Length: 205
Image (tube, rainbow, N blue to C red; front, side, top):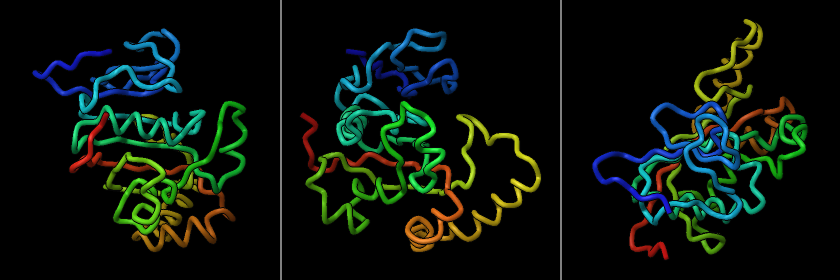
């Protein structure tokens, strides 16, 4: 188990590969440069309960064998109020989701609503998982983004991105309509979220 040093914040980058986020502890299944902890994420995270201050999970959750178990592990290691930064291929784009043979699923903002009691699904189906988060920010991206910055795009693509953002991300309702009705027609490529771990009155073990 990785031990937490109380004198500093612990930030974990799951599935970092060789492009670890600056200042983070890199976790991946292979010991490439930048990886600090070698671990199979399908078998849990090697950190103590409530020991982590922030988690980056960029384009890794779609690879997990058991998505609910992985979300539960992320929640377990997060301290109350820890932020989890998520990017994942959106289920609306069958090309982006399924062109990679290692992908297990596509995801959406609505998927993460099941972990947030302020959404209907999160309140009605909380029994699916004890992991609880608040969706602090959610964004639908027409085009996949890089781990650190947006990809360099041609000006027509940038214009399309701006138009998509205007019509898809105004509020929760607009995002819901986009994900459910017209988004699959244009092919949303990415769900981009910030989650906050909540643990009020909940035991982690």
